[in-house]
Length: 409
Image 1 (tube, one colour):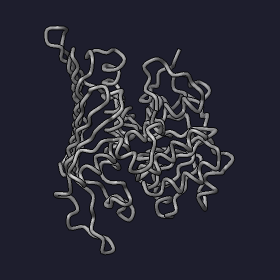
Image 2 (spheres, rainbow, N blue to C red):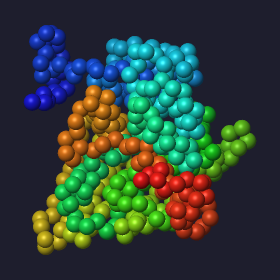
Image 3 (tube, one colour):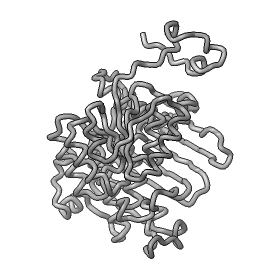
Image 4 (cartoon, one colour):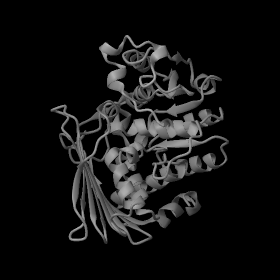
């Protein structure tokens, strides 16, 4: 029997008299793995917070070439953990620490390949944050490297673990509640990119472009729901509002802030994605339409009211079956740990693989390098289509870069 986690009781002042030897329901899970976080920015710190909350992996060490980032990460970590992580003098020391069991690479996109080269020399399991690279050539190299790697690389596409998207995947693909899926529509409205160290996220050459940097999450979801190979992509978008007056060292920002993307799949499914990054709060909507029903998953988060996100899932079947509308959520502590709980469940998938725990039927698996490449392929095709103003055949894009389609088969 799996014990429930009763965090509100574990941490309650009137339960402090329960000593360690008497803690059964209150006992945290055993720590089985030591992780090292490489990159101490916002995502690195989110992974540290989530690891401490889950409790199955200990934050053993941290590394960032900027001392200030390491100092801030350690100071914030002290607020919720008594663990004092090792601080490494250089990247190689962080990757090759014999006490480390798994490495998390959370650095800016354009640094991934160079850091991965050092990390893979350790032979350790790796979680590589999204996007896996800034261009398709490097992404294809990572797939090939993973094929010959004695351990494994997991890609940080955690949106598939959001509560409402996980339920949508289950309804559409496991239960087949909607019948045969025909169309998929996904949209995000959100504020601009936040500030980053040296403002690297304002420039295409460091990010791969907005649709690669931000939207690979959504293309991963669409690909997963389509269960097919993308054939053709058309996109229209650009930079209309955000950072039009921003410069750093004389270089103007060039990140797009809106886009519309249409994708045709080999099995006949058509999908579209809409992005707006000059909204004032966050909202996402997924609509999956099949020949037997329609599913709508919505998330709204008013950052100005600082209230919990409102997340719902609607199922509509006409006269075939009862319609239903459901509030979807994880426990508040998990949602507050980052990305509405998706990172927490991504860590569960990582810990399960490290501990060789067999997945139950219906469990969402973490993204592989091949899935990461496929998400980047759609995103990169969309970026190229926006630049040319023409629809782009996926085979033509692969041919342009000299990449064989077997990279994602």
